[in-house]
Length: 154
Length: 260
Image 1 (cartoon, rainbow over the protein chains, first blue to last red):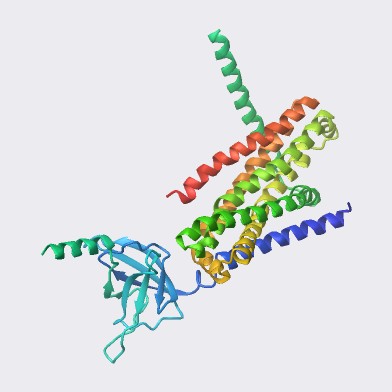
Image 2: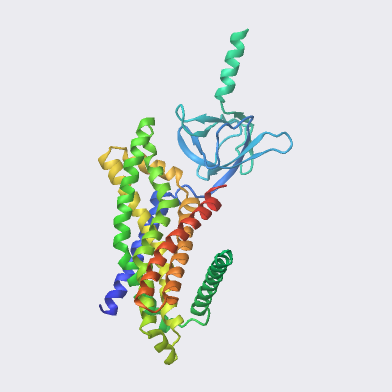
C-alpha cells in the first residue's frame, strides 16, 4: 500500500466523519436555523405553569416563533416567571398581547400560545426585556375535577 | 492460611497500583515533550489508516443494523399509544446519548484495541522495542504516541459516523417499511434533539472512551509478558478491561451529563 493511497483514504475518512457531524448538527439537531438565530427576550408571570419546560416551543397560530429560555420563581410573590426567547424576525407584538399555556392534543407536550393584541395610538410595541401582562395559566386536570366535584356537592 | 490469603490480596493490590503507575509513566513519556510534526505526521497518518479507516466498515454495518433494530422495537411499543410520530427522537436520542459512543467504544476495543495490544506485545517479544532504544530512538515517542493520537482522533469520528448511519437506518425501517410519516420523523427529532445537550455530550463521551480504550490497549501490550502466552493473555485482558471500564465510565458520565 503506497503512502499516497493511505493518505487519500485517511482524508476520505475525515470527510465522511465531518459529513456525519454536519448531518447530525443540521438535520437532526436543527441548529443554526431557529436555535441560535437572533432573538429577543420577553417575560411573563403565571399562577401555575403546569408541565411547561425549558425549551418548550412558543407558538403563534401554531407557528413556532421562539422557545422558553428559563423558568424561575419570583422571590417576592412566589409566582413562576417564564423567560421567553422570541425570534428577532417577529418583533412587533403590542403590549396588549396575551400568552397562555396550552397542551398539544390530550396528552401532548405543553407549549406557550402567544396571541397578538390590538394596536392603537396609546399601545406600545413590546421591546427586549418587557413583560406580557395578560397571561392564562395551565389547566391542571386535578383542580378541574376537584372544582367539578365540589360544585356537584352544592 | 489467612495470612496467605492476606498476602495474595496485598500482592494483587500492589501489582495493580504498580500497573497504574507504569501505564501513567508510559503515557507521560509518550505524550509529554516537544512535538516533532515533520517526523510524527506520517506515522500518525499511517495509524489513522490502520485504526480509523479499517474500522469504518464494522462501524457502518453495526450502526445501520442497530438503528434498524431500534426503529423496529420502538415502533411496536409506540404504536400502542398512537405515538409512532415520536420514533425519530427515540432513535436519535438513544443513539446520540448512549448507543453511539458505547457501542463504538466496544467495537473499537475488539477491532482496534486487541490489534494494538498484539502488535506492541509482539514488538516487545521480538525485542524490536529494545532494538529501537539501542539505536537511540525512543519507542514511546515513535510507537506509542502516534497510535494513541490516532485512536483518540478516530474514535469520536467513528461514533459520529455510527450515529448518522444509525439514524438513517431507523429512517429506512420506520419510514420506508413501517410507514411512519417521514416529515414527522425528522421534525419531532429536530424539536427534541439539542446540538449541545445531546450531540456534543455524545462526542465528549466518545472522546473519554477513546482515551480509556487506547490507553488500556497500549499499556497491556507494552506491559505484556514477552511470550506467546503472555501476548494472548494481554490481548484478552485488553478487550475485557476496556469494555468493562467503558461501561463503568458510561454510567458516571451519563449521571453527570443527563442525570440532573
